[in-house]
Length: 563
Image (tube, rainbow, N blue to C red; front, side, top):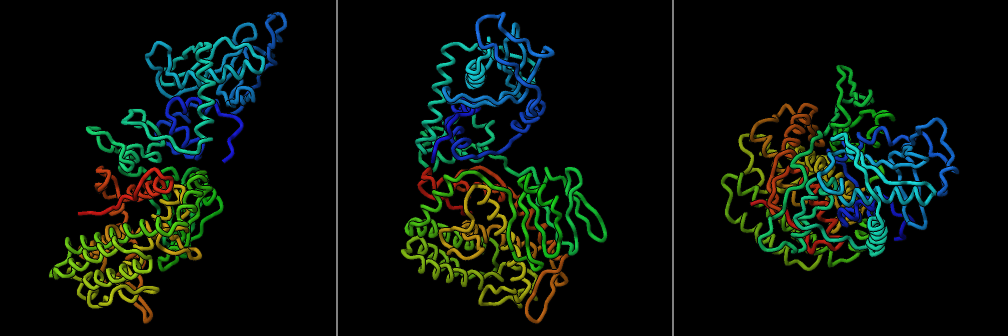
């Protein structure tokens, strides 16, 4: 990919802090907020708006020639400068007047001033030095630069020495070299820097080192650098005739009976079912906040997803298209996914089924091994079909008490479009919800949802989401259905049975949604990385790890299997 002409001064900071962070941000366009970046954005609130202007540069050594700015002291915020000679561009938070026509750039930082001899760490000093060099390049006399640390309300003077200038120029050259090479630098080793980095959930430093077999003997295993759970909550709107609008920073959901509100900042996704209107203002607000908006039919069929522009990581998209042209690569990943799905089905039966014949578990294990040894995609489809038949024939043995539902369940297994009985109605709805979750996860990871390794491309089908979903069907979807049946959360009155099929009533769907979201929020130990995170987080981690596989940073896709 062509290199940008100029290196942002912020990237001078990043490349000295962590070369992998520089690559993720500048070459792949990745970004994510955490509490530190949000705090930093608040600190920059007053300097992000362009105010004031710089005076004409002194442009000489004679103090008498300096033109006095109008109305001193002057200040200018959000000042953009660039230099082809230096190869640097910068947006300087604040430039203020010094003495005798001198100017001082000030860079704002959110934290406390560190107790180090130089007043600040090297990456931050180099960023300010780049700003000083730019101002000097434009003819200004700049005796030094400043860093303002908001938490300690302290300004630190940064002397720009020839050595520091050389470090800046070296960092600029290194940043260009890394991007030109087109290869992501390896992650840092057990670095404390990763703990505060907002991109650690995208970088996955320890996970990547584990998958590349780079962990040293005695090194601490994978650290959980991603939050265990989301701070935000999903919003489901199924009231027919309802309307979603915006009031301030809140979504307002109006039905004929009531109005409720939900803060946009606290919302992870919005799902609407059937005839629910969403105002243009609400759509734009959700797009700007990068909150996905999912549309389902009244019956619960996942129709599609509305999102913003998504990630800028074109490098990953190119790698996905290149890799997925290789049938051997696709078959290798698909075999692992299908084998994991069969084994997870086996585990669910072993845990919950009563009166289960041992031959069922044995048959599923044999089919899982056949899937792993399979040498053709067509054969894999046949093995998966055989396993599904064995599993769903035994599925009613996990259901306790709901005899009418068990009797109505098709002994040959699944039926759909429309489902014919209550159990199949429940399964169809949670599979639809899970498809949405994986579609959101792969899109968030920068992947193309329509291009998968196992499910063939078809108009409008989220093939990759369906691929990665396979091993989670029994763990999330089937488990939720078994739970609501055995705890009698749903009953016969929660279904609408017609001659041509069976569907959930609004009250039944609401009960199932509660149970499903509880399952998604449940903590589980990742079998490969050995830390506990929610199922919703697991889906995102798996999607990002699949991206690492495409980029050659992992040698295999880690299966998610429970014991």
